[in-house]
Length: 273
Image 1 (cartoon, rainbow, N blue to C red):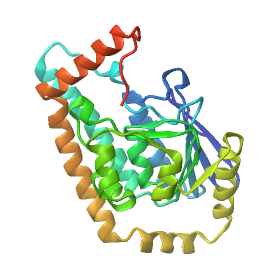
Image 2: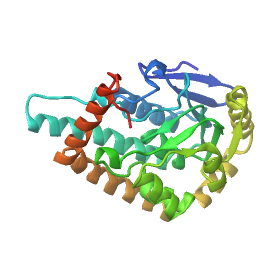
Image 3: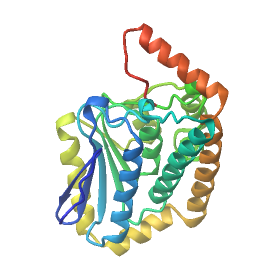
Image 4: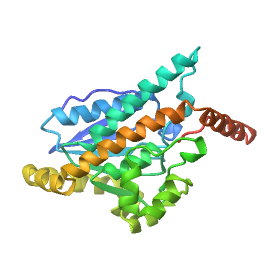
C-alpha cells in the first residue's frame, strides 16, 4: 500500500490490514506542533476511507509516546486579533481530530512506549486498547498552564479511572505510573519495551483476520450511540472552553512563568503539555 509521507508522523503498513502511526519527533519527545494535529487528522481520514485498513496502532519513535503540545510552536502574530484567530484555527483542527477518534470505524490500539502527556494522554481513553511499558508516565498538567480538560477527558477519565483519580490528574496534574493506570483500567496490558510493538502487532493482525462485521457490531454495542453523542458534546464544550483559556491573561501569565522557571534552571526549551 502506498502511504502518504508526513513531517511529524511515520506510517507503516502490515498485512492483513494494520496501519502503524508513530509520532516522529523523537528529539522533542514527540511533542506536537500544528502539523502534528493536522497530519494525525489526515491519518484518521485515511483509515475512514480505506477499507483495507482494519486496525490502527498508534505509538511513538524514541523514548516518548508524546509529550503533548509543544508550546514553542505557538504562533506569536503581530496583533491580538491575529493571535486569537491562529489559536482558534489550531483548536478547530484538534476539535475535528478528536471527533474522528471518537467515531473511528476501526479499532485503535495505543502502544505507549514512554511518557504520555497532555493530548497524548487524554486521547488514550478514546482508544480500544492501550498497551504500555512499565516505565511510562501519564500526566495532564493543564492547570499549571491555566488550561482545561480536553480530548474528552472530562468524561472518559472519571468513567474509567474514577472521579477522584480523574480530579487528581486533571485538576492537580499528578503524574501516574503505568502500573496504577493498569490497576485503574486505562492500560490493559503492561509489557517489556522489546515486546511492545510485537505484542500490539500480534493483537492487531489477529483482529484484522477476524470478522470485521462482528468486531464492528461489538464496538458499536460497547461504544453505543448515546455514549458517542456524550463524547462529541464533551469535545465541543472542552474545545470552546480551551480556546477561552488559551487567550486568557492568566494562561499567558502561567506560560510566561513556566518559561522563566525552565530558563532559570538552564533548560532553554519551551514547555510541552
